[in-house]
Length: 164
Image (cartoon, rainbow, N blue to C red; front, side, top):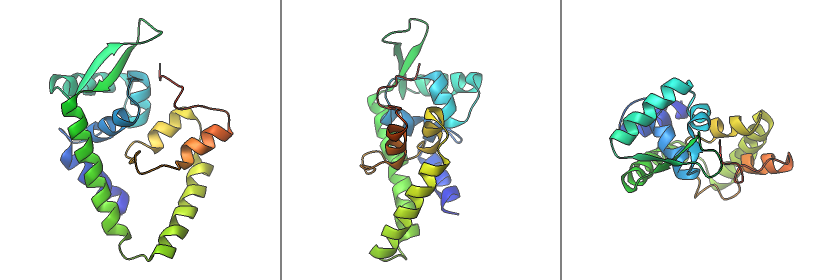
């Protein structure tokens, strides 16, 4: 399946197997996420996410900073090396998708996009679930994100949420 190939290719460009690729991609899209929201996005427990963050920080890929409004919470940001790693993860994802969709003509791609948008919007549960859905998305290329549109229709602002 394409989803398995995406995970495999993305993980091959990440510093370690598992959810590191998703963590790098999410933090590229949403700098300042808390560990709690990152845990939701990558599908790990809080403790597992703390260990992942510790490893990525030790490799110089992410850094913890003070939270803007909650002194107990740390915000997570990519370093310059982390941004390079995230770009590699997303480039490998793009290659898999391009190869998988290469058999479709433009009209079929449009139809697939329309159907995928409807399915994604219908399956969205809440703000936290949006991070899980979008964990390996290419945010620069997703200018009309169906998840953001659905959240907006529901009165939820993902960009205004700091993830605390």
